[in-house]
Length: 198
Image (cartoon, rainbow, N blue to C red):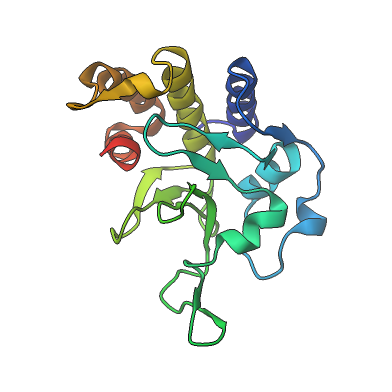
């Protein structure tokens, strides 16, 4: 099991290395600024205390993803935890109360979800109408795998060179799988890659 602080540090270093939009800040404000309606865990508190993402948008070569800061975390749950009804926003009874959307694609519909009531905060993902599936046993593992993905996409493939008219490069997919499998394990790694490039 990886340490969340080490994983966040690696993501921050990769972010700085490629001068990616946005920044991470350590305000230690999770306790005081956390939306009361939302679940949290030890790992989400550490994430938002030490490396709160501000304006962070990560290119994957296909779909850019945004990370939510504390101020936008509640709004990020709209369409998942809360849904629009005829005249108001209501609680979605089908959404697990412990699930927290921490990332999504720029247009929405591809949530990255922290499961806050399980030790180490496992991470799930979804796209389109596909049921959520696990991509990491812990938030630390997910953040570290994400750092490796960003390093490959930005550093070795110049972002948009990962695909062509024939689809996503098999060289890229092999390299990504080799990097994230030791972190996530075989099954989670396969689902992680499928979420981003399937």
